[in-house]
Length: 311
Image (cartoon, rainbow, N blue to C red; front, top):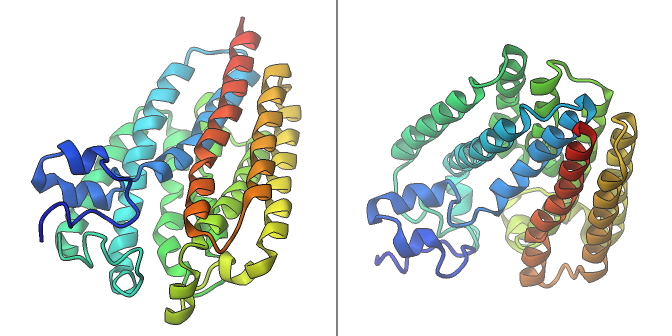
């Protein structure tokens, strides 16, 4: 198989992995989704939200640049590790789904044993990042690993695997408070809960790409559970996300830039709801990816608020 033919089906054409990465690294970079980095960005957003909100609440920015940089590295590395674990556990299922059978393990680009070694290397890099923080933050970060390990199996058990993904992908909402305050308070928990609702909604949109194949092979998802009621479900979960985050902002004493960021974030989510067509896979993918922009808009408001409050 030529490397051009080895490109993963849902990777962006002419992505940097397929264009410039050394040939021997490409299967491993594909395992980590570096050719499809949207998941890493979505994992990063709650981390950056909590870093900015906690720094603003503390009226202290001295840890914020460090958190922004280390959370960025950690999100991309640990997303890569999580995806590698997912592909190891799902390699037989992936071979049966049109969108995923081109992934490196079912496509024969890399063995499960080599993928496991790559997983360990990424986890070690993530550990090095985590060790830059205080002991409470280190323990908080390590605690997330149980959820990450369990997630790939949830789609075999429950129609709510997106809720478990939400628990894992939103963990960063706790980390900023763990670093700044060395505790997790009600503000952090509300931000975490809001992020979980956000993840459930956007991953439901994503899962609508695979509903036919998932139904055939017995994989469960909220996309199958909600079906034609998906738009209503998005209203509920996106509405809960905005509501819970708004309470977190209130408890943190956030100023007007944070509220403007939340309003724009909410407007973006409302736009997704009006556009959704669950029968249009390409549109579902575009709307799913647009959540990075929604998250960045909220982060921009929180970041400006942190700077103004520290000044």
